[in-house]
View 1 (tube, rainbow, N blue to C red):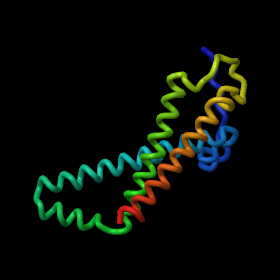
View 2: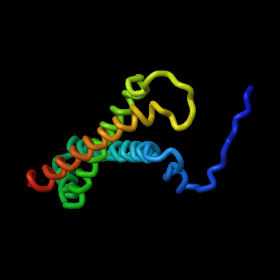
View 3: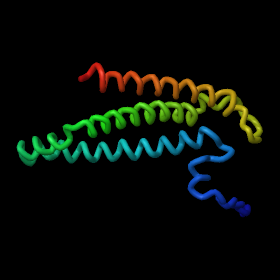
View 4: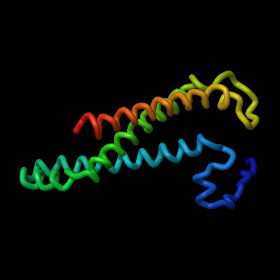
Length: 146
């Protein structure tokens, strides 16, 4: 059985978040996980609010009244932004996993050419699209919608 070489993380949490030599892909990895947890939290809160309608209309109205504030409007926008990023980054990851953005087989020597020549430009395009969707959604949330 081959020996597993483990390299200690001497930078702690900063090293985990910063990604070191991995760069922007590590930030996207972290942000993908954080947005996924945020969407899950929103989903659970949505189930709670919706299920309060089954108990009584008065409980549902008081619950909806609690969530009818500017703070929760900003929170809804953040959920929308998280969903836009998470969906587009997930599409990018799915295309990589299916082999559409991996390029031809090559010797695995860092820096990986398929990552630099194929995956990174697509990542930039997807993040520009995500930023555009988030900006347009923000305009609709705060200016056009109210």
